[in-house]
Length: 221
Image 1 (cartoon, rainbow, N blue to C red):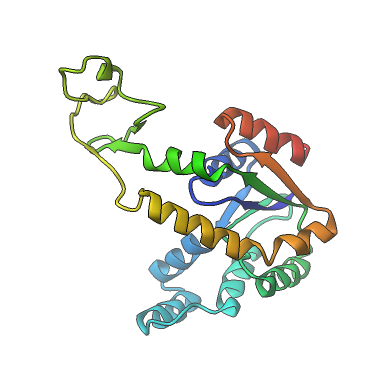
Image 2 (cartoon, one colour):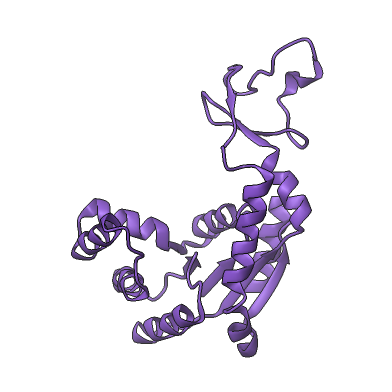
């Protein structure tokens, strides 16, 4: 099965994709990861990408399509694909159809994680991590256990560290800007797939395990 996983930043796409990879042996293709890996490996395409990026130019659709084709060549037909971050435009969607056809594949489902924007802003802006071990916490939903003792500094449940950090872009203005960008980018491609009847939506605000169950159900897994 070949799917596109859609959802704004913070909707949980990464978590759900990782579960599909672990449980069903699917392969997640993230264009950003592929570009970085190609540059690091100094493949012919990677060297081309590096030159483009060093010149301050945007990587073209043709280059991204080449990367995807190279990935698909190495994958057996029995391995399903999760496309993450691609396609973003109607032109890329048409290119993806052509790429899949060349590799005797087709797009089976477009899964969108629906979210409530205000709730998602609260989810993202409240999160922080232990600076020592990386354990995740949240101001409202998951404080360290010793938060009940107001006279003590917060202490990580896993390693005991009192040092925590937040991502600098986890602020309301940035989150809302990213969501607006997501809506603008997905708007051109969703109607194309809705016409085919392959778009399915799940409640991205539900508990992580419930979201997984919803995805498995709509994919027939």
